[in-house]
Image (cartoon, rainbow over all chains, first blue to last red; front, side, top):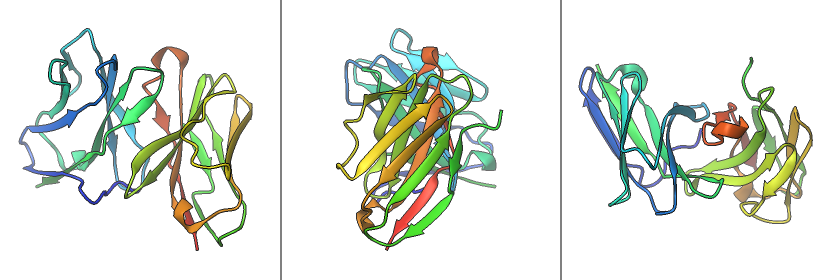
Length: 110
Length: 114
């Protein structure tokens, strides 16, 4: 898929490290947030979500943190693997519409 | 389930021609979404349907774009006439009513208009 923007931030990590991908969202009325992963040539894939009444949610190797005060969302990936290399998008929804951020490219080197 | 199915996977056409993109959502999903992804604008929502009814088409760029969902298992996105600036990857996604944000995306159609 076309996921390389002119200003797409990139995070480079070593295999086994923990990765933290950050996202600033825009709508203070958004009540639901999602992280998606997009591998080259594929559509985005749902990773994890969190509602605005929570500040942390954990999945398998992933944790999402939500700070509503500063409108900030982060995705933490534990023990990053080469298969985690992709573009990661945060998305917010407050009025039945999903709005995607510009994305962050994660590069994992062995 | 095979997931969301889109066709064609690649489409190359000349400016002025009509283009039709097709989508089969996951069976049982109530929502269907059409997105466009470009280098410059990222992932943009064009239109979405709930139970086959268009709910929000505010993202459709121009009257040249139209979308239909004649039944729960099929949707089309049509561009007529196509222009080079329409070149992008078009994604279809579907979700169930309760988890509208957890959308399942198809593999996309890469459209090139020359």
